[in-house]
Length: 561
Image (cartoon, rainbow, N blue to C red; front, side, top):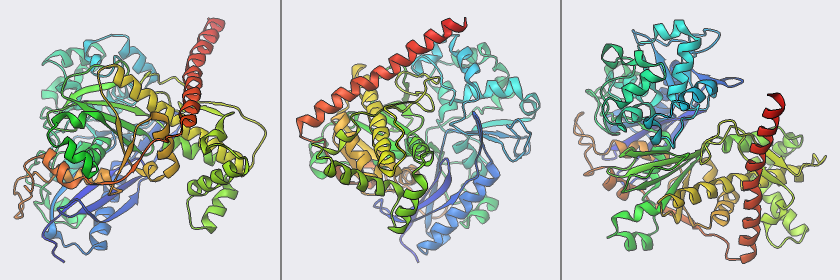
């Protein structure tokens, strides 16, 4: 069924590959997903590029079938993915990054923390390159992971012909063109004066990545959305069920794609007020809330902020500097808290019998508890329970991968109500972390006063209301739920005519964002002063939990010295 051309976005997340089909007004026509296998062993988290490509093909075919889209209707294809690291052999085959040598496991997943020691050693160099990463690298970045492989898997190191961010690998697999986009590994090079990055890689023991015309880490880097090669190769087109030559743009990090898909999703009144203010976009912070949460804000000026990644020019929005913050475990933390509680199986069965998620059921339980206990407002239920959500370290703003999670206020209670209470306190802990990030960014030159949220957690009404109350910012939810997929599709709307259908629908990415983003709902902070007073008090406790942890860490280090 011809629809005058549709845009296809593909997002490879932590647990699945998803494909979404959008019309030229940014409306989602249909989407499909396919699960991805993941291996977790202590700090090591690995995936398979072969498995991921099969999942991508399955999702694309299912999405096209769902809305009856013919291959010739697909104007262009955009990819977005996590910042995972792919090891590629000379013939394009996978190279194992696993201790056990399993050749399927050729991807070190973004959340992998195996390289803590390498991270500390890299940070000890105090290189000027590190200013673009808040003064220190994270074990989730590519440099420490590469150093870990070199030091621990020498056979793998010698076999790898290309190291690629997952998004770049996907476009390489689709088009045969290994031109890189501005993913994290490429930002190391593009953000720094020519030659400084090469000195840095040599200083940390990875100078050999530059041998052979930089073949292992690529030598051609372009902005996201740049047309690649001649579009889809015959092989990949057949596997995806699309036409050979379908235009493909360079990829984007998944969180950045979410930013593209939501940053201009302002209500009509605000849009009219901002129409003549080019910097209005600089007052907005996007939260892409999934397994982890990325917090992104742009500025016209270059702002260096301790403990925060960036600034990166045009990495998300053309001609703006991107500041990227984040929390390493949010959706993953809520899942962990729920799944490891004694009441989880019972609640899961109750939720299933009522055709709702366990989180929707807990939201209902909390409302009932607040009513039963005559609470002045629901948030007050957690007055005796405080959570520091650093169960996978702290990415921003203290940039401490060794930080640990804290739950203060536990009892012997194992009831469903206790689980609901612990769930509420965990949501609040995550929201206090976001408040800390917003305050930290504003203290260093940003002017954030509005949040825009997307991702699976943005569909949770309690999660969003607590964030609004705790940050004091209105939160705008977009019309479309699949904003990362929309961002991937937006990337390709400016491609030239490579496949017989003009994909150049908009003058540029910013114009496409304004045309295809749309606001759905605005969630405002509570106007009750008691709510603000309550959260101000709990926020002080939240901040103290990390300070206490540092003190405890120092005490034990002295005891073991």
